[in-house]
Length: 462
Image (cartoon, rainbow, N blue to C red; front, side, top):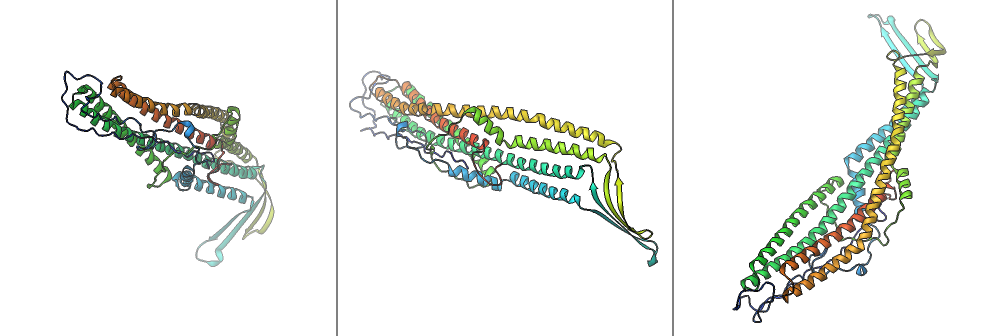
């Protein structure tokens, strides 16, 4: 299926552990504590643990790699491919549509068999005397029905075609849902890894600031600030974990399996695809199962009108009858039958109106597909344009944080500056993750909607 997509490998980054001070006992300090400068010479001030910030996807090991250090990984994503195929095989909505498609195929067979003769046999017995038995048989073979039988067969075929595209539409919707849930779960999983690393760094910073306050090197307000920022990160981590659990729950429901474990990392394709909007729009419209379903439904309404119009006219039949009086007789018969008075006249008009409604719906579907193609392509192009900048910003933010830590130790930066640098580094890491997964999800939606993938022989529309 997704020949492009877009597995991943996330660059990690991590926090270096702070070296421990020579003594945690507060030294004698002369005069009031000064905001920001290093500890007295008698105390070995612990190096702040933010020299290397955790980046997207790593618990705590290496600083985030710059774009030029990134090596493209897989060209497509077998994990997502497998999940989509599994969902198509096992989801109840697809199974229901497949059963309806098989029923529509049987309807076509039944319509073709309407060309065969119609037979009726009647057996009567009056009283208890065996000689009073009477047998009547009638066989009618349609010779000419004013096109009613061909219209019935054509209607069954159009109905089967419409049901096939309902199945394709259901499969496409399911694929899109799996794609979105998968990318949400992967993106939030990397968010969780970043926040776990940041929270560990915050814990070290709070412990270090607690020692500085105890040594009367830093004011207590700095400790409160560190505790406040740590609490914010912890709350954000709890929210991300809940959102990821929700995304995994949706994915499990779509795949109909509870033991889903996603592989870590984000692998980039060797070459990101490129589309032009006019060609992409044309391809999406041509491949749309919704548009083809609407066209098939218009054909069903057209055949309904043919059937009701033909029913108003007489039909020619070859007849064979047998009874006790006239015995065997063979001949031709002309038969005309109305149902519900002259309701066929209005039924024909209603069928024509349904045909017109279906034909008018097709341009609306095309307009919706144009808007969808434009939105997906804009999201994809925007994410691809921001990707390099977001990665570079994430790498630079860690260098800035490292510099701010050193300047704080030397008294040239305040603790608030350090906290703001930490927040900006975390935000840059999360933004870099969001940009990559936004491009990946948008690319997969485009591939699915333009029918450039081949997930399942029965599921994918032709």
